[in-house]
Image (cartoon, rainbow, N blue to C red; front, side):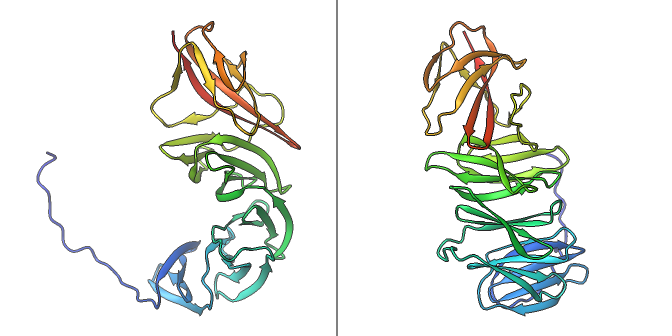
Length: 305
């Protein structure tokens, strides 16, 4: 099938020897790559495949992020955030976090070019660091542990996955201008990763065997009938007669919407009688109301006779 295979010659490989084990890469732009090799920070020139800078370090660096102009790179090392020059790797400033647990390495950093802020996620807190002065601008307490994050296409909103309980997780949205939590999508399966598609203005969330696709503008605080959640799984939840909603610790307000956004039924945890509805596609909307926070999640449902 497809015709005979053609053999090709050996693929040219250019080895670059380094001392230590390569742990991670961070592309800094302008053909430069930062590499953490156990006890060294290495700056590569992709044009010549050569090492421009080899800087020894005494402690491992767990995470890295850089400014959009490529002038600064930030490293997380134990309870310290380091700002370094991306051209010389010289240390420019440090930010210490007194409550950092050295046994927990699940931290990460993200930089917003729009607001020129770096966000350092440490256990159940987020530190917003002013990238101009390399000082802490704000601290946001999340009460949950954040796992990964990405920015929307404008850089104004930061979408973060959070572990809320052992059986549930949440996608939280932070405003990088006010350094505040502005929205949340609760009751999701465990989230493995989140990534943005700037061209489509969507956020892709990997949850077990399904990828959820959210618009990258968070829902407003007012009622809206056009809030949309798309999912890439091939099936739609189908119910007949009874719609069962599992109880949760968040006590959301739930309702069933028609395809044009009209509310057709108030829902409650447990069994809900939908036998009086006509067959077709509906949407379950869950609204989470908390202090200074109102968010909603929407999922598709098919009612069959």
